[in-house]
Image 1 (cartoon, rainbow, N blue to C red):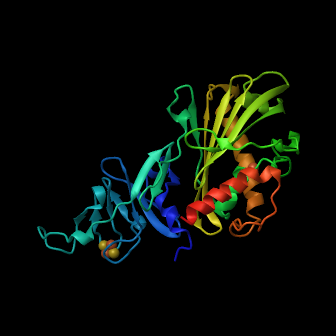
Image 2: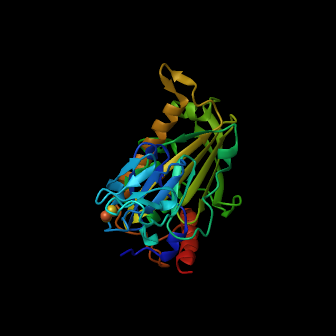
Length: 334
Ligand code: FES
Ligand SMILES: [Fe+2]
């Protein structure tokens, strides 16, 4: 049984990368349920409960035949829109009972990710406008599975006061510990959050991230969330280089989630910084190291982020998380 609030079924969740679906049938777990994903003959994403209508065998263990999915147990074959095309035990020409068809779920591809909505979508996939902007290049990473509740992941994505401590092995070493006063606002049509400006020490790999400039430069950032579990963080360097970092969590079980991030940059990410190494390689390596620091820290925390008022001690720097919790509580109790 799922302990997740029912309303989460009605949102889009990123569960796989588009690439991973090109060659195989995928089994993914979301909101305590197993789903099967594959590419149908028309190149679309097929998504259904990972349970054959006949005897509930896991279809993800089946095989693909020109985009149609064959169940591993008795060989029923499912095609576009989940239609059951063949029941091998039945005489040719006999009609297939309508209940033999697989019920397809809402699935979409966006930002190189496969998104699934098990219920009826009540909001679109969070918009990242850079994806439509030709001056930006998108960089994807693999999906990761963390032993961390999605609520704790969002709390962390919205938090800057952990930088000098959790991220002391990467960029945090240079960070100021005092967080300036945070003013929350609607950043655009999608994200609610805050903007801030920092001066950064622009040396080493930071200089590659920032696109050059002096040894100390100005960086303008925004961080905002879209319910339930997405965060967009934008960085604009004084040099004109911009980076958008989109992060999403998808709940598997309480205390376990899918995590991914997608980057967009407006510089030439294929430019070599040294032989055989591009800006994209450099930036990805840094971001992955940063994300690993978060994962190691968060996996030490148990269960959900307490949502009850007063259950946690919050200070001024925790304002964004407090607001996310307020809105999330409202959402799940609606
Ligand atoms: S369980 Fe799938 S064909 Fe029998
Ligand atoms: Fe972090």
